[in-house]
Image (cartoon, rainbow, N blue to C red; front, side, top):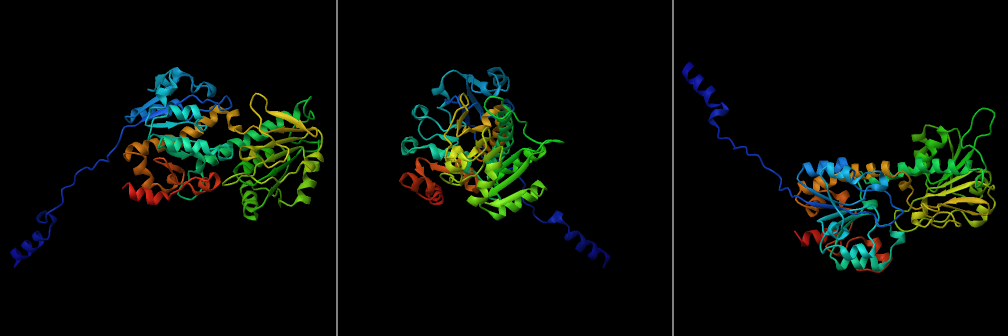
Length: 406
């Protein structure tokens, strides 16, 4: 009996049960060549990858081509990139022959001509400044194109847009302080407030990420802040995150006008998911503002939310209309290109690594639906319905295309 029990106990052990052989399964990785061109626009000083990110990509078996002086505006030298393992080239055409080109501003017509067929482009699309010919040129090249501003995360938010907006929100107040204090253009006033001095009044139109960060800096400097938005939810949210009972209001013309009449600084921070921002500050409202006050129209890259705004440049950033200073540079983040370049690089280096690990962008967008939302061209086929409607171009659903090419 004891012998039988021993036999039963032994027979139940796992040594007698056939086991699956465990083998290491590697992903079908792919080495990619990433091209970083020098930005053609003098307004764009940022670079999409910093040397540390280049070093990471090279260490993972990828090749990075950097056009000479591509990082000069952001204070990164060719030596910095070459020490990180990047390959410095003097020809723009060579960079645009890469598997994937990563740049900040949309490519110019000349740059599109240099692009090889069926390559991948990652850049901004800046829809408010585009024409149908831009998209037709990319379509002819059968390009797969991703837009920075359309990429989402797992929660449906726009992570890169948020990072850049945080920088822009901070920078907008610093710019306002500079021009408000200017003894010739401005009022010679310090932005903020301290004992015995009436605090500056800052009106922020838009309670998104830009508005939140602008408000945080202005409050920290001692200014009185008033925030306007067309969403009660966003107004509640901004009060919660600021941990301060700032003045908030829905955008009502009479209430907004009263705030503008006493404002020292106005930050236009409205954002439209697609298309142009609504114009909520009329020319008549600007006419009633104090002489020497400052408008920073952050929304200018989507047309602007102030009627008197018109796009300016870093070389000539301001103009005066009705005795009010207008700052309307579309890419404010380029005022701090070194910091902004790190924000871009920190976002895109993991994506580039994932593209390699998954064996290409096509495999990655099948898994990463937030990244797929940034895709507006797939092998030369338009996949963004809003762009299709805005420019009267043919459009197809991305999911159907992925199923077709599976």
